[in-house]
Image 1: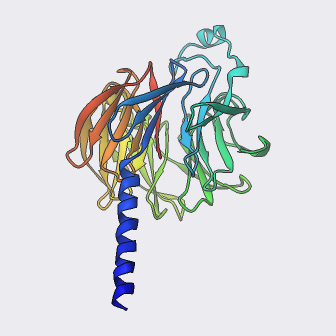
Image 2: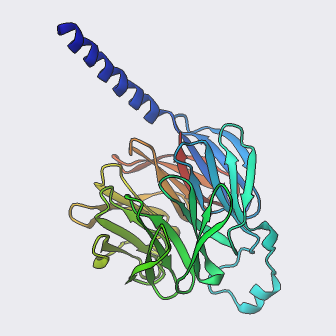
Length: 341
């Protein structure tokens, strides 16, 4: 009996050590909007391991659940600042042949295929099993769902103007799509795309982050320098938090592994805001590089990585100390960022 207990204890110790080893060895992938590449960074050493060409204007980026495939949204639409004159936009015709979601083998950097997923894909989400993609097609005011294996379209749902952020709930049953122009957030069923609810939040919502238990959603809105907190089960707005600072444009949000904090990039605010979820208050801000957009956390939640679009760098942040540790050169216009094995 004693031998069995000792063996079980050894098994649990081995499992714990393996889990900690997995957390300490991870990879950071950064989409380089102006350079057309993905920068591959070793998570432990913060050293650039590789640069992979993926196509024009890579932005949204995700890793498959098994870590073997990197998904990158590429687009032939020209880079035009929000609110630019329509004549200027008309003079820069998009190349729709460049639009799609590129699938990259994470072990080799080789492009496996490119899925055609409608016009100008910018952001998207993977379903929990990794078999479907849900995409925001901004210029068509649509959310579309695609089968990864066959490339077939599963559904297309009309939403309001300028759909942007796409996020699947922790239970995998629903997907939230933020629409910038009217400040809407559409809640769709991931199976059939049926509209289940529509939330109205502050101006120009950009992304969504959920608590791990799926009880709350946090929606950054650049137009109001705020983050809306919503009941993600009852589909109703609970409160709106103002993000302090000059030129703050809340963009991307990520949640800590235990749900204690939500981190929000602030764009021109050159910082990451820290929201304490127990009290739903802004607990502080962390200075990073210029124009942070995409942010991601290490598997243990202790290190945050911010894609600084105007600095051409990635900020490495100690979240406990709330301090930037270093910066990593990352192409020309780092936009999206994701952590994988």
